[in-house]
Length: 228
Length: 103
Image 1 (cartoon, chains in turn brown, purple):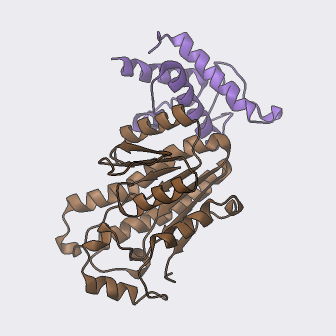
Image 2: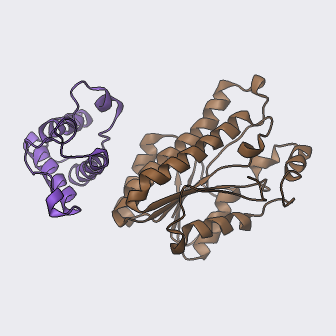
């Protein structure tokens, strides 16, 4: 299993959860992690750099010969009114959230196709259906991830690979910490189930997507909290 | 990188074609020949077949020459004469990419 963005937050939790479940997990972030775990291998790379990603997947192929699961967790956001959003920020958001998801999915699928089996899970966000003001570029990037997920599902189905996305509601991580409290409370009040998401809510969805019985589930986006 | 010559690259392409055929029923096999038309007018491959062959060639290049190449890059997709038209043109393009990596 390869997970991007594993230094902290959801990514770190996923590493801890899946190594405990017995998975061999490979993770990455721009910096090193403060933790080490058995059955976990960390790479310091920039997920938007094609050369680095291609090289990393070549190493995975040489070392492990296959990949079962790809989780495109790495993502960034920035809260700005669109009129005050610098293009450099917009560029970074699109690169990390969309381009990296595309790059990692492409390279993962090249490995997975040999086994005629694979699971790719992408991260969408409730920012898209809820149209959260201040998150125009972020929400647009996650809308792109959704469309990418749906199309990849079609293009990779002949290789036995399913591609799905999950859309978390606010989770207590650094990504959300910068959002004003009244904003997140207002957001949570728009959910059918009005509470913060827990990390376990996320692994609940991922576990569903990666189960062998879910081989007929592809191209889907599952939001938490009743959002649609 | 192992010693690079055009014959070695040509043989690599034919081996990739053999592996490509190994996943297909016999009546769908692509002829293993330097004259084989791959894609386009009178091509033996559909678009998914071309994708699979390109991936096989890239993997074989990585294994034999320890070099990572991307065949379906911007240049390849914009060339007037597609490098994917036949086995010879594909072989020449792979050789070109490998030579560029050597410099």
